[in-house]
Image (tube, rainbow, N blue to C red; front, top):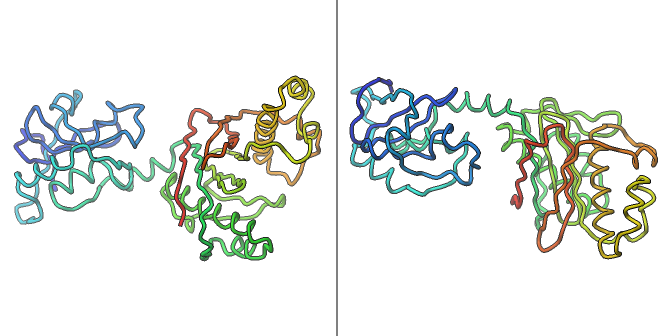
Length: 332
């Protein structure tokens, strides 16, 4: 397909420069351009879940840039008729499910115009996507299934296979499966594209991706980033033994001792997850109790409710403004 600066006609596929990439749509008239979300410039701050197939006038589509019209080679028989193209586009108004890599505005326009869902920009977008600063956190409940498949790398699979406790083995297996999902979603990579090794401290490391794992009861948690990241999640409940003096520094302990008994567990668990997330960034096998109590750093905390149970989630990262939390990921 060639792109020309000319007047569009009913049913044309059109595009406009939007930053480093192009934004696509289907031309009906100057008052009706059908597109999968407005131009990225116009929808700044919107999440993918809010983006839907919509209409705008030509000014709202162009935002001051030049309009280009797609022109198929005369021998190319793929394209739908203008009437079919517009009918397909209109039938999808309000549709959601936008994804920058797999279901974007170019995919939509090509599917309406050519009957084929593809994006010529995908590899460029993938490269940009891989290099964006991210701090993505994924939460999933532990599946009931115990269908264990092969894991990558083999050393991790062997490590999990050797675990004697069936519950712990299941949690370790599925939190690694959640990591596979996180790597694919956040970095557009298969886990087999990465290189893993185990550090002397016993922590799994990955070339090109920082990650951290946690699980508590039936909740699994994975954080991935380009920068060092640590995550910890714990169910909010009273500990079986008093561990306050083991994890709280002097200032925290003085606050803790003034609290009502019913709020002490939440305070204690939040302090624990905060310091665990900071400890995971350090990549050391252990620290002394005094060092653990004094751990300080940039940590974002949130209480999440999963299956009616409250959990404390702590994320230690140098890019707190980039944190995105994906709850209720379904693992099979």
